[in-house]
Length: 123
Image (cartoon, rainbow, N blue to C red; front, side):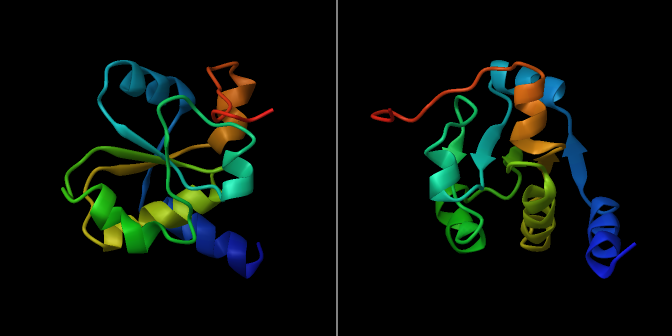
């Protein structure tokens, strides 16, 4: 195991990851805020309906403006689940108590044939 794999493995022991089925249920019942942390070019290719776009590059800087209550249920996702795992740990360090990472990210979501949408004005 290389140093990054070991680092990621240790982080995954300290965060909560959530599967795509449980995420879909939480969204359906309005029980969570879904945050897409991918960068703008990735967002422009489409996203999970209802997601808020807050790129990883500014997540920690802007999250308090978007989500001031530290007990707000949050699910973060990226393409494959690595960036969202790292971001979940950081938000926990900032005091967010109900933050989870979508295991497998958007790839797992799409593989399960769950809803996906393109941003307005995309061709």
